[in-house]
Amino acid sequence: MPAESLAAHIRTLDAGELRSVVHYDGDDYDTVFQADRVRDEFAEVEYEEVAKHLVLKGLDDGFEQPEFARFGHLDATVRWFHDVVAFQVPLDDWSGVIVTFDRDSIEDTSALVDELLAFVDEQFHDDAAEEASADDVASEFSEEFGQ
Image (tube, rainbow, N blue to C red; front, side):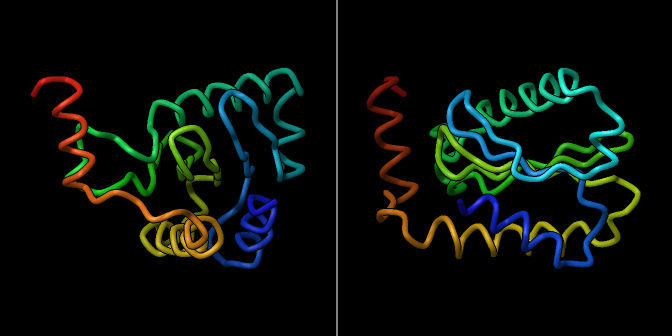
């Protein structure tokens, strides 16, 4: 699974203290990495509840967002919590990867995001079918919703 290769790749970086990596497809998800300290911090049912809510947030932020079609597809969403940073990278409108780190362990957020996106582009998107241009998506959205 490519998400497992992403988890392995992140662990090779000196980017911060990795907490977890979750791959989702629709409302199904799989935790492909979970740090021991996260297992100690959460009861299993608590972790599953947090993971489920992160997935639901991820589904809200799909890969293609017609209202922003001229900006291109969504590369990533970063959620800054007091103690944790969650990066959500949509792979398409219904699947993606969520990666969490201890917030105070990240020294260069920009470099980390760039590294995550480069890996995802190489491993996930290079094999994807040719995408419609932003203008085509905007036109379809306009025709469908009469705008």
